[in-house]
Image (cartoon, rainbow, N blue to C red):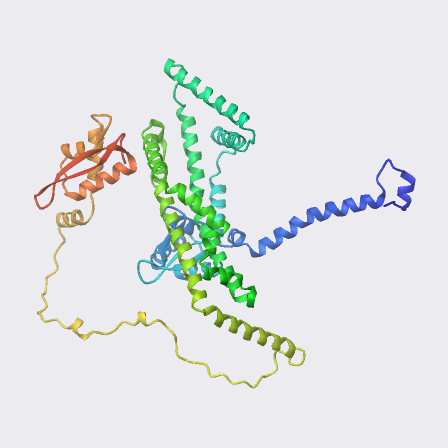
Amino acid sequence: MRCHCPAGRRRGAALPPLCDVRGLRENVAMSSVAPVLEFAALMRRDVAWQLIRADLAPVIAGLLGTHLAGQTRRRDAEELYERLDVDLEQLRAQGMSLPLSGQGYCAHWRSSGFLIRRPSADARGETLELSPDAIAAIRFLQARAAPRSAATESRLASIAALVRRLAIDTDPDAATRISLLEDEKDAIDRRIKALRAGDEGTLDPDRALERLRDMLAQAADVPDDFARVRGEFETLNTALRAQIVESEGSQAAVIDEVFLGIDHIADSDAGRSFSAFSQLVLDPALSAAFESDIRRVLDRDFARELTRDERQALRTFLSTLKERSAEIHDVITLFARALRRYVQSQDYQRDRVLRGLLREAMHAGVSASERVKPWHPTRLQLDLSAVTLASAGIVDLHDPSEFVSLEPLEHHAPAVADLEELRALARETEIDFDELTRDVNAMLSETETCTVAEVLARFPASQGVGSVVGLLALAAEQGTVDDDDESLTWRGLDGVTRTAVVSTHRFTGRIS
């Protein structure tokens, strides 16, 4: 196509015609305007962006991040209300204006999409957890509050290793792959020779600690993905039900496939991807090797620089993945069974009829809007119920026999409380961790390491099994757990000597 504009004739072929320049500018403008419009639409609908822009964003991210984004991802609603009420009182004492209660704020955050309410599987009531978008927003704010190094040696090494592995595994030439693998083998052989000759030492503690913390940062993102995966399955389940209701006559392919036993939930892209991930997590050989590697890493000297939360996260990482994986499996099974039951019980036929009636009513309303204004009286009388609807489970029946006392009341004169008696009562109900800490540190002042069995042999369990449980808990949090077993012996409060065989729990440094 030739240009007939004056600029094109004057400048000749050396420069683009003016109309081409204008077209280029328009294309550049459109390419830069499109992201702006996309971000504007995203800001209006995205829950994560709404949380970050909220007036109470520090309160939401701080409280919900503490109670629902740590080791515990789901809590009973009543428990969460109580915890939030305590936190809100402390924030009000700091001068913050927070007029609502914990339950009131949770109701507002639930309607905003920050919280998800689900029925409790263990007891009556409901549980609350963070939505996937809320988790993403809170993780972003936490990362901004405590930023990590932008480029670390361990992260670059991991990227390089992944790229090389991808290059090897995707090379169609078998000879090239064999050559690359032989290079890796030669490198390993050279390291083995260097180790045997004593020319290669262990990794520097600072670099080892950096790698470990970088790995912990990556591992922290994995459990958050389960919330997103569950949301994907919920969206898929809703879409399949809508497809069943929307389908007409011979086009009801989903209905026919459900009758034939095809599991659309498990056969989806998300279902196949999660199935592969779950098989990897539940592999017994991988689990055993991972647990053994964790124990060896925590036994190293540099691991003592980890905080208690970091050690706990590393110990429970695999068990957390298994628990979340089993939970998602239950969700997939529940959705698949519900979808099959929905089709086989013919409930979708009733929903189709209701959908048709709603469409007819909407069509009639559109037609009537041309003649009847919205404020025009319809003269239609509807008798609404004035009865408050509530669950029968909240009714507390009155039992007169509970208030009848057959024994005379005893009158006790008030007296001054005995401090020693109060201490004795406290020791009967709570573990004396201060005493156990003193005993362990006393042992460590004489030797570098000690096991729980050695502590019990030196300092008998003054609280019976309570002292044993307390020592095991302290060792699990601030010590190491070996693969070998040891026998624990103690005398209970009833005077009976008992013995138990457990994994060797070892203290490697002073505890607090």
